[in-house]
Structures are given as C-alpha cells and as structure tokens.
Length: 196
Image 1 (tube, rainbow, N blue to C red):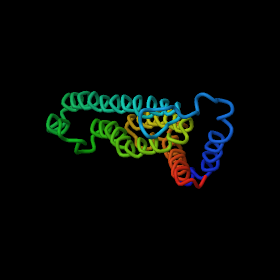
Image 2: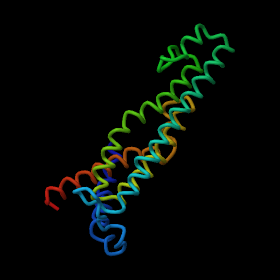
Image 3: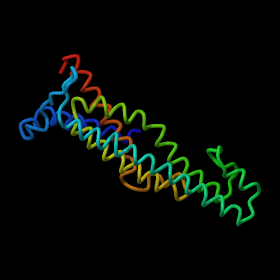
Image 4: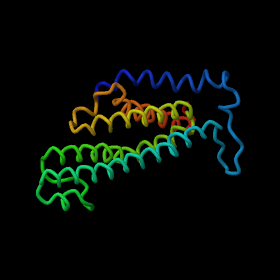
C-alpha cells in the first residue's frame, strides 16, 4: 500500500482547494441550500448523492449480474467438458466453485471481483456521505474514480488470473479514492469540531 503515500499530499491539496479556492470561483454551487431540516448542506452534495450513491448502486447491481451470467456460462462449459458434479458445484447457494479446473477458476475470478467490491462498498458509501458534507466536489470525483477503477479491476480479474486485476492503470484508483474519501471525512470531522 506504499503506492498510496504520494497521493496523500495531492488529496490534502485538493481538499484545501475546494475549501479555499473554489468557493470564489463557483459561488452558487458551494453555498448551503436551505433545507427543511436543521442541517444545511451545500447544493453540490447532490452530485455526491447522484454519483456515489445512486450510480454506484446500479454499478454494483451490474457487477452482480455479471456473476449470474458467468455462473450460467461456466456451468454449461463445465458440463460440456464433462466436469464431475458441474450442476451442483456451479449452482446457488454456492458462492464459489470447488475445484481448480479452468472453468471453475474463471468463474471464481468473476465472483471474487464482485465480492471484493462488496467488501469495500459500505466504507465507500460512508466516506462519501461524511466527506461529501464538507467536500462534495472532491468526494464526487472520488466516486467517479472509484466506479471506473472498480470496473477495470473486475474486468482484469474476470480474465481468470487474479494478478490481472491491476493490469489497467486505473485499478489502483480504488485505493486512491478511498484514501481521498478518508481525508475528506477527516476534514468534515475537523470542520464540525471547528478545528479548521
């Protein structure tokens, strides 16, 4: 994870820019919107809700559907190739397929690409909702990066070689977006405590 170290100052600089420079350039978008609730949110929190919550939710559904398609595809290939107990091994409720056949390995890689996305999705959403309170534009950019990086990660994984998940330059963007989201959340916490 040492590859993340150079991204820390970049993330801090982007948060500073959003707090100090962008308000004068984008006056209407960074001003709080009067809501019927006690809290006031910047209007641009809407971008966070659209990209990081709404679009990412449909993206995750799409990844899940790819697992369903892969399950059917590799089950049929396994049956055709005479794999033992293919129907039982590839069918639900089995999350992964036992065995080390080429079809099992490819299916398991598709499944793992989706499963790993599910493992970090709650953290991504929490960081988006918290960091987006004070840094909605940076948080929205993190969301765009996270979705794109997740797509490339899953595509790389799906080829059947786990090492291929990082073959695309953007795949590590998953971790960069989570790091920057963490910094935005920390900035929100410090802002709420009136320390910045």
